[in-house]
Length: 247
Length: 384
Image (cartoon, rainbow over all chains, first blue to last red):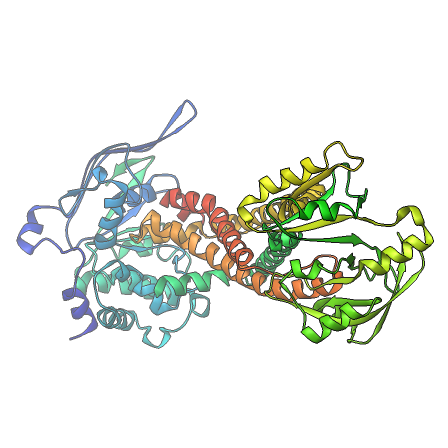
């Protein structure tokens, strides 16, 4: 079995809706979503009355100028921030209503994160970083090892498993982060400027890898980017301006 | 396994910072242990003394003597088994730095102290020699004395040079027995004084009584003091333990100060350690936020900080405890017989490790609480 096939079928985490359902029910369904911050007696709106659906297996790019609210929207969908009002359903679960503890468990099994600055643990090797999400599962050590080996093979870093982040290039670190994002077979992968810290050639490699995750593994990807070339790879572009959706 | 590895690697990410923190804890815990041992040593005499022996002294002050004739009357008090007496000599051996306790004692004195173990032959030799003396093992070892040596003491209370023949070296029946005292015959002192200062003869500093029943201590004490009520030299009788504690209480303020300093040392290193852990946690907010984003709980993040803080504190504490033993040994050798029983007790070791544990917990409390509460989005913003 290829690494792609193994990872696509060895899931303990979130499962995708089946094909028939996914045609009718979006994987992510956002309704009347608003987010605002209060600074003293000032209310600063960041997202205003957002409605958005993302189908299972879709690859969408969120674009917009700085301060438009795209990262905030991504954070809300990923369950690392809470909305001021509205509803966010991911695979049928209204995550806005989950407690902090339940949300943490939900993230562990449903969301894979790819950050602009990779956010790897500097004291852990590539292997250790990729293994992290699996420590929250009931998989045995041998099962974890098999899955980490497959994920590292998928991103082409089998020979770098024992290297720490400071011994890897930026592109390699981002590939480790991608392996970490998909290791628990999440429902959704969220990527915040995944190529923002990389040169053009490396960025192309990373974008190619994301495409493969989407095409070969059927992963749903929501990516925030400023880069039009990165956005071109997505199936759909969603524009935000001053917290309002401009599709 | 994973957590231990992560904590260990995190702890030594900033090797210099962690090493300096550990060194600080080692110094603080060792200093704490030394000060506790000093306090213990201060009380050692009182702890080693018996509650089945009474000490009778002048009710006015210890500096006033009591007539030797009291011995006969004390012996007649109901409950008293044996009576002996002792007088502080206060001589100087070679120079003032060689301080040790010297007592002129009655013939019956050693019968009251079975914890002083002296071979029969040496005891007989001591009793047979008017200028004979015996010394404790610790004292003899310190000055390299052997049985048969002549020990000259320059009198400060009783002028002149007094030469004694060392006839025996006594050991303690247990570890707590003081073996740093020098004893010689009261008769030798008394006869010399009577010759030189006739008015000062037949006087002694204290009487020591052994009891038939230790439970009768209070009643016998009162009976002895009643016997000498309204006399020229009224007495104050108390158990040997209370008598020793009376000496300790004279320096209570100093002891309190030492005790306070020992805790201040711990509080200072606690603040230093708390600052280290706060810095460490602040630098890693991004990592903690990433852990949380991946699904790890707030408790897990707090636990990482507590484990790291406890690891550093307990390692420092253990090294501090190990350092205390040679330090105490060196200190004991330096101060000689001024403080007997200067030994690190098991209780002190436990207290030191508890102090290290407290340092670890207190230092981590606020950083762990903050890290657990930090919002993921705020923590992630710290990266980049």
